[in-house]
Image (tube, rainbow, N blue to C red; front, side, top):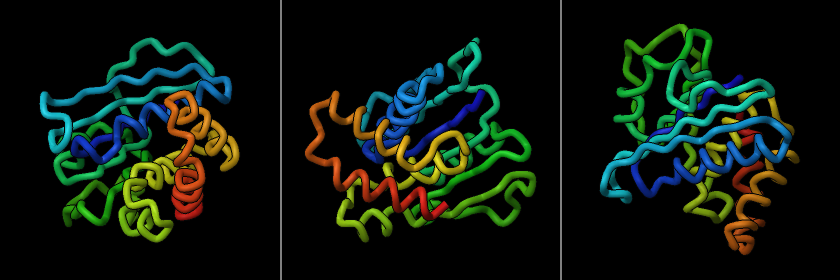
Length: 178
């Protein structure tokens, strides 16, 4: 069972990224849950979600002990860093997050300039997709093609297939960055 905790500001796409990862897991045949948390002000307020997936039964969709934390802003890192299990992974948006000097040494930290990478593939709103690629690679549970297929299926159901080529490029960039 994998637990992924994603957080950032409303509008950064963390809830979409979480939904997409949960749906990728379902697409692959895993059991999955997605549990969002957000303030009353969506855009600009704090948003987070937890995704759990695996072959076995998921007993609780709530945050317990994350294998991976995605911190898109400093507040998320401060609030949730202690919830990552020793040996886990903390992925930070290095365009917005400053890693404290005395940060945990028992976790792997990956600093990703996701906003720059998204702009490089002409998809400035795709930073969350870039980060999803990093997360997917770090789980070790998906090939790049499985991730792309699951992501594209998710967006097709939402009627957003017009972004398929851009999203695919953003996913590839994140996956290869990891």
